[in-house]
Length: 108
Length: 126
Image 1 (spheres, rainbow over the protein chains, first blue to last red):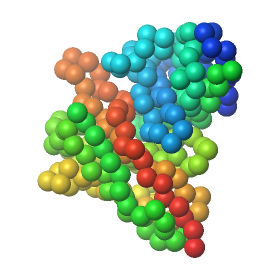
Image 2 (image 1 turned 45 degrees about the horizontal axis):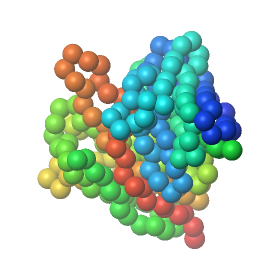
Image 3 (image 1 turned 60 degrees about the vertical axis):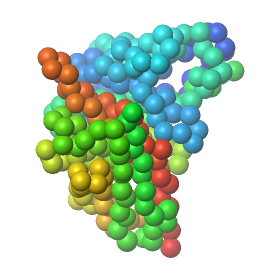
Image 4 (image 1 turned 90 degrees about the vertical axis):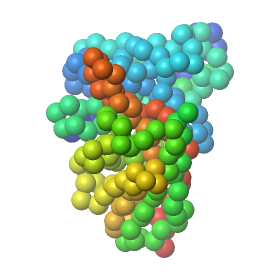
């Protein structure tokens, strides 16, 4: 089955840029979606189809996807961005959905 | 506005069958392309997709849990039900249901989940 690998944690100072990677075999050929999850809350979609943002999500959140790595970038990080972030794809070979291992973003 | 809410037992014993209900509003599970998924998250661990049921009653299951899962829908009640047999302490998790929107004409189908229910914590213990 398809596997998505994320770093367990990323630390970033306020105002700086956080980059969260999601690795998978030829992930560049798939559409990647990203979720933000704060403690005790349900996940919230922040990026879909690699680069698109749902309405209400700040422009500070952006995504890219190429080769074997997809990346969620958070610019001008704020304290409120501290959360867990997970990537997700649909594996067309199996018609199944796959989530990444999750990354905890800490704002220093 | 689309909302979903999970309900069911908070505690089940090992070997028992878990039955969870997702009650939704703001959409119909008879609309072409619509789906409702179940996803779980053990404490401190990653999200895990479990199952998805489509508007046409087609179903998909996680390959690792397929033998234990059954998902059904009741469109008259706006509900989706997940059954998981032979529960084990490792199945302790928060269980979420989530909406999968239909695709827009001329565009690829949507393969993400938005929004999600608040989740319900299920503990498996004797």
